[in-house]
Image (cartoon, rainbow, N blue to C red; front, side, top):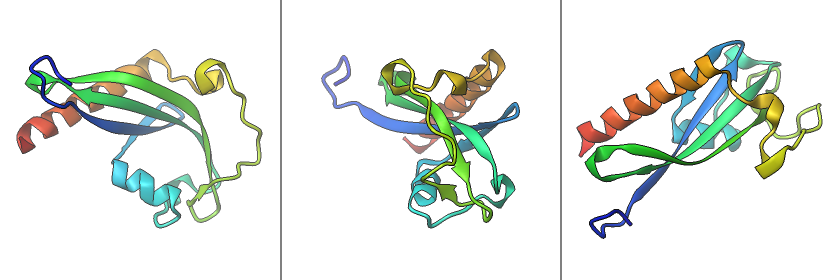
Length: 125
């Protein structure tokens, strides 16, 4: 609930991080990737980092990070998400792989994407 007693809205912001690139994924696109209904041919045969920020929409249309997850994902030869990557996961505290953490520059670009998502939310209100 927000301060006014209204239920708060939540959403997931997903980013693929690859060699300094920050690729924001719409939630629906991420679900389609996970279900094998979508592919990203540009990431064929790649292992990239995935960042998932769970955010809450606060009063005034501001977004606040509630939780975050970082890990690795693999793509097969056609650019489909591979649910069984060839490398074992390294799990740190809170189920976050410390080798997948974003750089400060990537975090800043992810925050800008979050601000852009906030603006889109304001425009649809």
